[in-house]
Length: 271
Length: 271
Image (cartoon, rainbow over all chains, first blue to last red; front, side, top):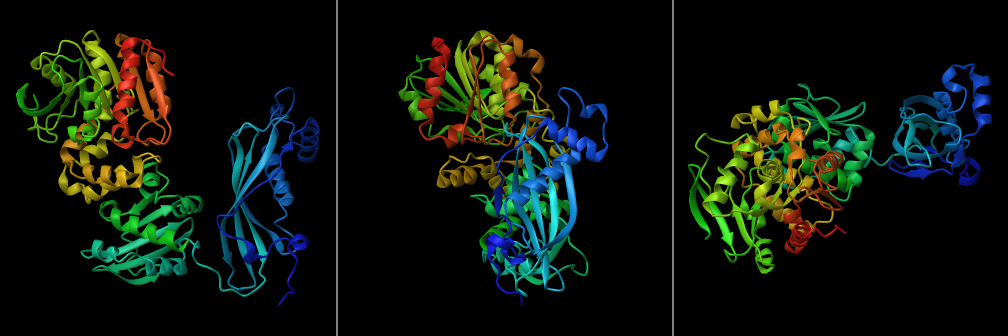
């Protein structure tokens, strides 16, 4: 057991990150010196990165995003390393831009050892004009202060979360599923949980039902967050705009529209 | 007089309120629905001095089906409405419509501007870009392919009602919309997705106002603005907090619509 740290000195421990937390950094102007220094550092002197209107090299954005994150004071001695970066370049960064970092905690999972966890952050670099320049996710390994347990309310797609959702289902759900025999999959990025349903009752919650899922409701972590945080249950709105989709038996997916709405209601109740 | 009448071989139900000598206003409903959508608006419009004609389009509400079965060409509805206007002795009249009713109003403006004193086309553009997918819509013309249709209509309606709508009112709108005949509304939507007025907008010579709710997932505001830019003198209004059904969502909508119509017929600049 590590002595309780002071937050200012050490930043946060694994338990201190709550899925859905949001942070915004101060602005960071992009200067001609930045362009020259990054060109020297990377050796990328393609004509795109020279002259008036030059674009900064793409990875400059990642580097700045990491620096702006550091300025938020979230990470101190508990952070042990960076595990991955998934990045999208939406618009060029040019000299004169003022970049802000908008950061949201997307996912926090304890590792099997129990002594640390992975924290995935959605990071968006936004210009003063409000337009996104670059965005993506990065995952860090962070030491834990305790050995858990952790709250499952936002551990979308895990078995623990699936059980909590089932416990929170409105009794109406049983009536809606009274004629149904199948398995509902709920997926968040790489995490999927199966709810085995027979005659209105959820008889098992597992990583994978023996016959697999009849269909799986699929959304990424940011979309699951919106599902549980929006003022009203936005399932149909997000399905209509393609942010929530389904794999497997499309007929049964449509047939269970109301049941899925109730499942999302339950997910909202425990989030 | 409100009641049934034969129009183009369809025995149809047509509400007709107010002084027969007053300027006439034709109010058109959305896909699969009926004139009942205008029930809370009619008294205020009559009060404001309009003769208000609210037909149930062929196959909708209390009207019998069109002789050829469900209609999937919005132009056919426009032709039918001109025959209705003839039967009622309306030489010149105003039109307000929403969704397919808005697009039919736009079609009427293209084909019969000389008979129209004013057109308010709500929740409509000149071309949807082919969405929703006609292939999917055709597939769901077969009842067996369209599970949980009533639930999907109710929840799908709630998804496109604007955020400013009182929740109780939103639930009422969705409950009323559940009543539709899926084959009729899918045929309407086929008409919606395939009707292309882009090349003919320049032919409109009557005063016209396009209105779209900012929360309307069915419409791309830019497409509506584009349509307005192609129609000589057209106005375009985007309503914050409003979704796909302004006449059902907005309290006191009769006064709002009456104001738009007055601005169009007197040539007053929109605020």
